[in-house]
Length: 228
Image (tube, rainbow, N blue to C red):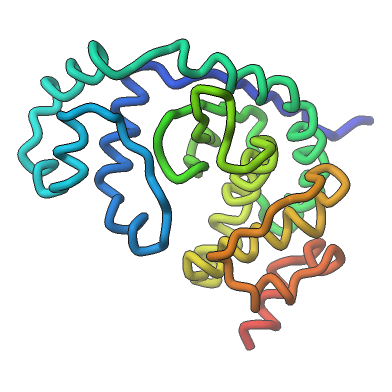
């Protein structure tokens, strides 16, 4: 009897409404991004440049007016064509990585039967929705991503989702601790899939250094002992 799950990955560009909503969300978190050294692109348009230079304007922003300007003068579906080709070409690597994560469900790792990968022009590079299993990654018009291989970002975000509740919240990890942990998992456990995986400078190297390929098999126990 086969107890494995067939996981599905959908890749698409964000719609104009999704992209606008995401942009507003990104602008609302700009202080956090600035604090942690993220460089966040925003539309090269006077209306949105003005907001980015004075974030207090978000409090009184006419959302419908802003949405209309964005849809008429900023959003361009063709922007995503090259990025979509790049992701779709390598998506089988992400599917292979997900299958390998399946055994971690025994200690609480969260896997979705379906992941939706949405491309954006904005944001820090990658973000995730823990409740829905959606992942948003930033691309440039020429199809270049923050990481050389966007599949690395996709797997990185899937790992984030998987450990959000059973590890990050349970052990109250800080932002730099969780980034270090996710990088350690990706670099150690998927080194044959994520070739030349790049480690972020902002991640906590102390937590990175305690994680090995073997310790990932029972990660909560390893972190519990480390916390002691």
